[in-house]
Image: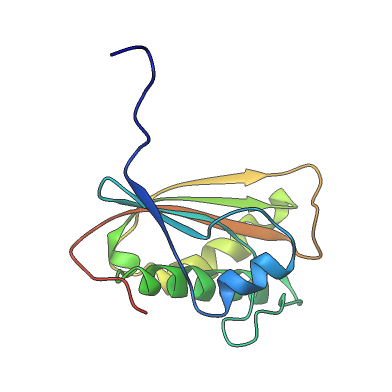
Length: 144
């Protein structure tokens, strides 16, 4: 080898409605990237899966919307919450911890992945949290 590493084997997976909504916001990212048997899902704000619009409201409403969007990302890749091995929750206020936990439990009932909750000092958007995750490919096929 001459010191140049080969590009990793990865591909972006399009998520109906959500991928275009993120592009429309001008954010340079792929919502879902598959690489070497893993799915990497970017931080998902509280975004409505039907309209692509940011969901406002209290932290429970926002968390529920973000988790529904996360589920849509997983489903676009042919997976479910059962394949998630790790999540990171970024919140605008550490005081949201209990409310986030209550909503999170509704979505992750049987399988609890590793998780980190991070309070951030400032926020670039009109929402109070983002949730990202890493999942393993369990054999489901991407939709679309």
